[in-house]
Length: 209
Image 1 (cartoon, helix red, strand yellow):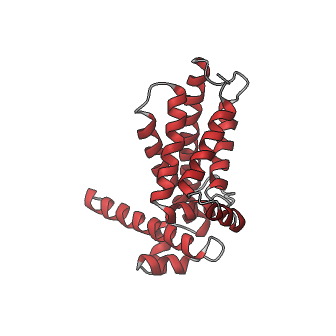
Image 2: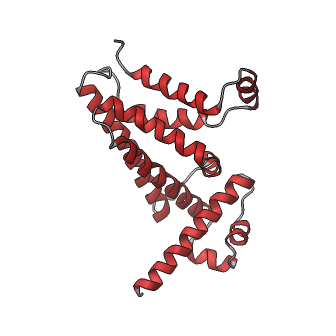
């Protein structure tokens, strides 16, 4: 396959992933079908199956792609700081900014976070795990550094802490109708609410000064 053909194939794959993310955000993961994605991507359903064998594999690829974008922004933000604590806070800030700038993508991400992937041999599931590992290790390394610098408590286990933080942020990005009503009633913006969540998580693992 020539470089031009490979490039066109990759461009079409990216277009399918974007169409799938849009469809998931609009219809929800449960109601999204391969027909819907093919229609959004403006291609034949048969062509879609040349790239992804089923809905689960496609969703794994969409999730991996979203995680890749988040990981890149987190790393870019973290690289601007020196201490572990600064990097931890920068990572949280980066995720908040991405979510606020790309609400549709994050809505799709929240849906995908609930999906179960059983076929660990599927290349797209493997890629999802790979991107998850990258994101977890980015933040876990910052925690390890902060522990060495004496800012984070010695009893904090970096990897499960990072996995929990990911879950906590997903929940924070998905307020219930009652929470939304309370935020509006108290005139608290979503951005401010997420900043408070970030700071609560930050302080929960750091030593009291």
